[in-house]
Length: 407
Image (cartoon, rainbow, N blue to C red):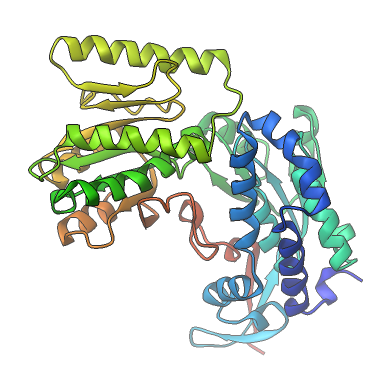
C-alpha cells in the first residue's frame, strides 16, 4: 500500500510517534549516532544532544496537525475534496516525488521538510550526511508505519549522480550557499518546484529602557549568550549582529562585559567542540586586530586568551558581520535607525530578530521592516516553532498542488 491510500491522520500520528522515540536521549539509534554527528559537525556532544531534543520534541501530533491545518485549512485536505477560500470544492494533491539536499552543518535540517512532504503523501529521497541521521530516523518511521519503507529513503550521492537524479523529481528542496544553490538549480527542469533555503543571519536589539539596571541587562545578556554559543554561531538562527542603545543605566560597553561573562557561563553548559585550526586562527586574528583598534581609541574587544569567543564592540560600520565561531559585533546605536542603516548597508537577509518582550513600537517596527521572518525573545532564536515559516516559506504548502473541481 502507498501513502496515497493512508489517511493523513494515520501518517501524522506515525511521524509523531517516531519523533517521540527520538526525543528519548536513551533511544539506542540516537545514542549510536551521537559521536558521529559530533565528529561531522565539530560540535560537542551536549550541543548535539540539545539539537536533537529541539528537533524531535517539536514534532508532536498537535503541532504537526496545527501546522497543516494552518496552511491547508484542515487535515482532511490531504484526503479528499475540501472547501478553499470561496471555491466550491478543491482537491489537495501532494507532489509525487520530492528530493531534499541537506546542508553540511545544521543538524537534521532535512527532517522537517521530509516529514511534511511525507504528510503530503509524496515519496521522498534525502541526500543524507555522513552520520546517517535521516536514514536512521526513516528506519524508525518504517517501524511505526510499514508504508514509509518505500516512501522515505535516504542515501549518499556523489555530485554526478545528483545532477542526473534531480531531473526525475517534482520538487527539489536544497539548503546551502548561494553558489551551491545556483548550481543545483541549473540541474533541475524549468517546471520543477525548486525550494531553496539560502544563507541568512539573525540579529538582536537591546533598547535603553531594558538597560535600567545590571540585573535586567544580565538577564538579556544570558539569553543573547545562549543564542551566540549554540552551534558556534553557524546557521541562520545564530546571533550574528547585536545592536545596543546608548543612554541606558548600563552602557553598551558594560553590556559587552556582561555578555562576555554570560558567554563563558553558557560555554560550560554547551562546551566548545573540535574546532578546526583555521577557524581558531580566524577568531584569534580578528581579536588581535580589534585589540589594536581599541589601543588606538576605536572600539573594544572582549575575548579569552584562547579566543574561544570574541565580542567586538563598535566594529567599523563598513565592516560586515564576520560570521566567526562564537563571535559577534556589538553596535552601539542611538535609535533603531542605526540598526536599520547597518542592515541595509550590508544587505543582510534575516531569518530572525531577537528582542525583549516589552520593546518599544519603533523597535518592533524596525525589526519587521528589516525583513526578518520571525521575531523572538533573546535566548529563543534557536527554538523556532514547528508552525513557523522557516526561511519565509510554508512547511507543507510547497508540496501541495490544488485542483479545482468545477464538475
